[in-house]
Amino acid sequence: MLNHKPINHPDTNYQKQIEVSATTKEIFKALTEDIHLWWSNTSQSKQKMGGQFTVHFENEYWWTFKILEFRPNHEIVWKCIDGEPDFNKEWIGHILHWEIIEDVSTSKINFHQAGLTPEIMCYDICSTTWDMFITERLKTHLDSN
Image (cartoon, rainbow, N blue to C red; front, side):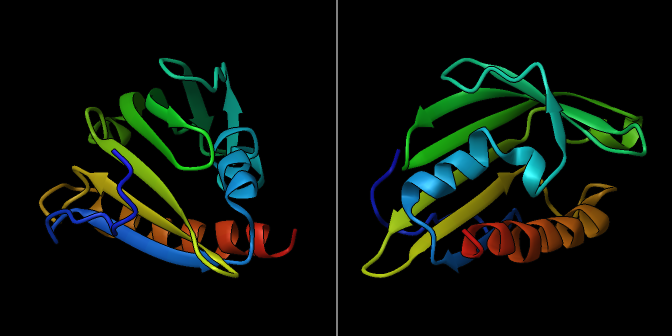
């Protein structure tokens, strides 16, 4: 899937790109082993092609993802397969695509969530929360290494 070009998806799906000072290896680690350091706690984590993991939040909300693509230091694709409460069930079937691109002195992360569109109930809160997790918490985590 990786072709070193920006992800080009319809504008209605959520997308975000950040530039960080971390290496592609550090980014991939943050998106697999260190999710708890910038997003939330995980359980039942099997970080490999076909593996699954669950992200848990303090309010007892959670999502479970299956890993569809696992290309170390380049790309990871998750499919949401379950979630609670009903608000989180809107994500079931969504594809979350992380693409890592190495540049001369920095790296770029392209993120796209197919299915997170303005038509679904959680779009406003989910897109705003993603903005915070990606542009603040993930970026800070990666730039501080």
